Image (cartoon, rainbow, N blue to C red; front, top):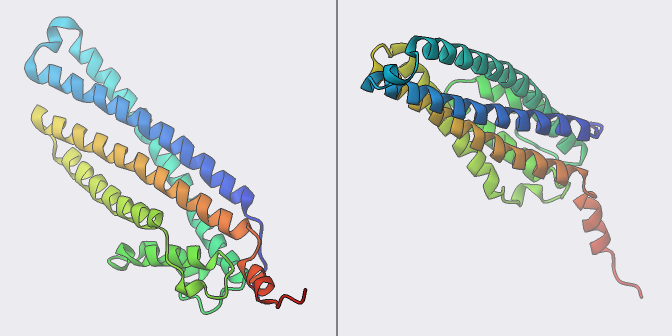
Length: 228
C-alpha cells in the first residue's frame, strides 16, 4: 500500500509558480496592447508625426522578446511542477484508501502527451483524483465539482488560442496581419490568466481534501451504534 506524503510544500510551490505566471501573463497582455497600439499608429501613419517609429519598433521588439522568454521559462517550470504534483496527488489518493483507481500515477500525467486522447483523459484522471482524495469508501459515486469542468474547458480553449496566435504570428507580414497576430496573442495571454486561476482552485481543493481528516474514519465513527 502507498504511503501518504504530506504534499503541502509541493502544493505551496505550485501555487506560488501559478501566481508568478499570472503576473507575467498580465504583463504580457499590457505589453501586447502597447504593441498593438504601435502597429495601429504605423498603419495609420500618425505615429511618425509624434515619435521615432523605428526606435519605438525596436524597443517594442526587445520588450516582447524578453516577456516571451520569461513566459516560456515559467511555462516549463510550471509544467514540470504541476505534473509532479498531479503524480503525487494520485499516489496520495491511493494511500488514503482509494482502491481500483483507473489511472495510475504515471498515466495521470502521461495522458497529457497522447494525441487525441489528451482531449479528455487528463480531465478524467484529475476528476478521479478529486473524488478519491476525500478518503471515502464510496468515493466512486461522488460527483466532481464544477471547477474541474471549468478548468478543463479553459485548458482546451487556451490550447486553441495558442495555436491560432502562433500560426498568425508566423504568417504575419503586412501591418493588418501583424495587428491580427498581436490581438490573437493578447487573447491567448488573457485565457492563460483564467486557466491559471482555475487550476489554482483545483490545486487548493484537492489539497484540502487530502489533508482533511479521512472521510473513511468519519464514516466508521458515524456507523458505531449509540450505546448511551
